[in-house]
Every structure is written in structure tokens, then in C-alpha cells.
Image 1 (cartoon, rainbow, N blue to C red):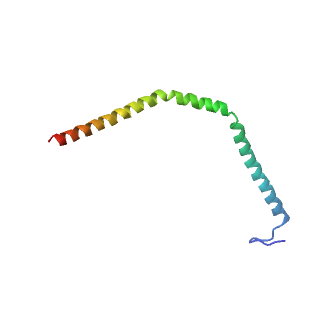
Image 2: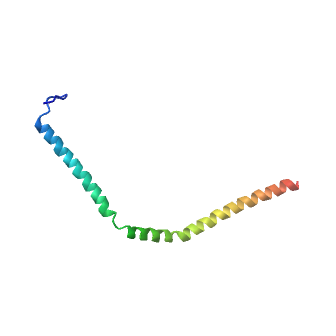
Image 3: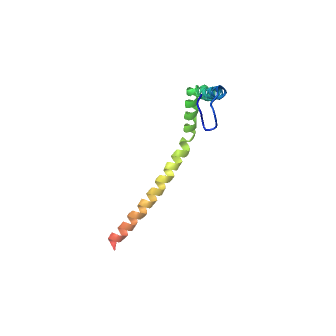
Length: 88
């Protein structure tokens, strides 16, 4: 028998360690298999994502128009300032 810090490692501790390892392995297996089961319907997920993106298209267009308007106003102010500096 081997010695550890506390005392001798008996067959009971080795058996307990093996059961503990088996329990951990089974828990990990259950988690991974549950992930596979929930992740099987890829077609439905792609369809749902497509529907959600299509719903945001009009909002995205309005956002791009607003950003373009702000950039245009800033650019026109810069051009006006540059023209006034050259004219003076």
C-alpha cells in the first residue's frame, strides 16, 4: 500500500475514486449529448434567423439614411467654411 499525507490508501479509497471518476464522466456525457439533441434542427434555426434579419431591413435602411444625412451636413459645413476662407 502507498502512503499519502493522511495515511494509507486503502482499496476503499481507490474504489471511491473510480466511482467518482465514473460519475464525472457520465455527467459530462449527459451534458454533451443534451447539447447534440438540442442542436439537431439547423434548418429551422436558419429560417428563424432569416426571418429576424428580414424584419430589421427597413429599420437598417432608415438608420443608414440618417447616418448619410448627418455626414452630408457635416461635409457641407466644411465646404462652406473652406469657401469662406478662400473668398476672404
